[in-house]
Image (cartoon, protein in one colour):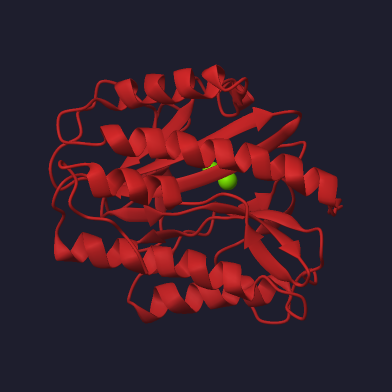
Length: 267
Ligand code: MG
Ligand code: MG
């Protein structure tokens, strides 16, 4: 069952989502060729705990880290570790926090230095999938309309949509109903209503849609080892329209000052 949130609950989720956004802003200062993904994880964990919150992913079903860090062919759920980011990589960083009893969840795929035009187009398209998903999450539509719109943007650009992993409700639990796939049929699924809080998170592959799980039991990569993009906002439906509770504003501000990183992905 979907739990539609009160204004007070949405305010709590907004606070959690803002802390996630500020954690991303902190990470964006440090993204550069030569940094290890484990160093980014430790920056995020300290930042979250310094703000009286708890990293949401650490310990979630046994996940061992604060961040999911997923470079290039890794779609989602990558482990931070000794891997050193290098010029031309793209890297999805997914972050969640628990603050005052409510979760926030947001992901951004960063460009490490200068990236290829092919990767840039993939990221711009994935970003556009997220933006259309937010715009279509409005009263009068169903969740199937949202899923369909995201799929159209991705497939019309020649990319494919990961099927096995989906967006989700957010609240007192990190993942709660409804599921929000990034593919679907118009008119299907629940109607969008005020008080709905969902994480919209398109995962878009440059090659085919198939994925495999690595032996660590978590890391999901593309079967064809081509790159994958991922952007995510937690949004709430208020007065008929989806309002993002997380924001990329802190990321953009930090990337503008980050001399190691010349590519800012926008629509
Ligand atoms: Mg996430
Ligand atoms: Mg999520």
